[in-house]
Length: 327
Ligand code: TRP
Ligand code: SF4
Image (cartoon, rainbow, N blue to C red; front, top):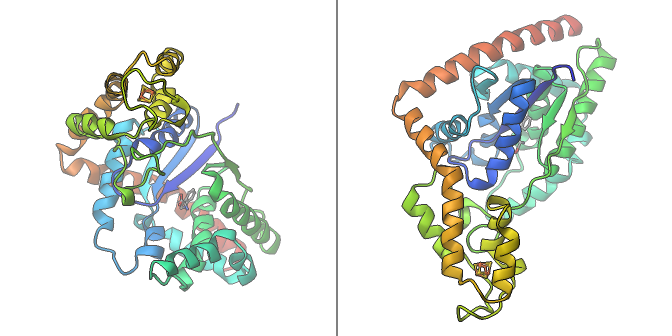
């Protein structure tokens, strides 16, 4: 396969959790073979946090540290922060001139999100939030990406991006390829309480979790409520610990399920095994993260370097765009 241009981004939510590992592993695989752009979408964070901007700077650094700790490589990929490449704003503005309002209003997440946040007392019926997927289109088309690894929920945004590319090419000149969304199968990991893993529930296992915190969180995981005594027969299919074993102890799951069903293994022992399996994966990430943060200027260097690499491309794209639009 020839080298593709791949682009993806995340809003800076601060430290990532173990559920993000599948996304990052996918990025890692892609960075070995393709020309990849991975960026922190900090302007997108403003659409919902415009009244609480103070944590964003730190959140960018925390998330970047996690990316690098997992193995996203700023030499192999272009790793940058959106707001450090102001060309994204210009492209967004130019796109806004020919994008029909109705295209943005009909993006399924638009009305849903406004309503969902309104229930929590937050008003995001703003110009910026309406433009969220258009800014995203600018992010993608800026690097003339062929493919965009995203979650299923983002597909309507990719569809909008394709429409924007088509409209630009039709109105002015064929500058932009139409990118494909790449949806990877990601096993859904619950939080330690069995609900969706989320910072707001405080039920997450951070990617670079400290060893003792990891032990404690695994100990707190919910199991099959039918198991009161150690030799009660269990139902691994309803157990959060087992869901994790499924992913992190692939060679053992068969035995664990059987032992659980027969009441031959207790939950305490089962959790101990899980903690060991998780630590095998997470310890190297924790160590690399500590090393990365031990030199405070390192992240600044990475961001500066990524900005230079990204802008080289962005400036060229904007030249093509301005020429095509006669401005
Ligand atoms: N909207 C994406 C999310 O919430 C983040 C994002 C912004 C993005 N710009 C992008 C993803 C461009 C892929 C490509 O996950
Ligand atoms: Fe869950 Fe393991 Fe207990 Fe079975 S033994 S209920 S799989 S923790």
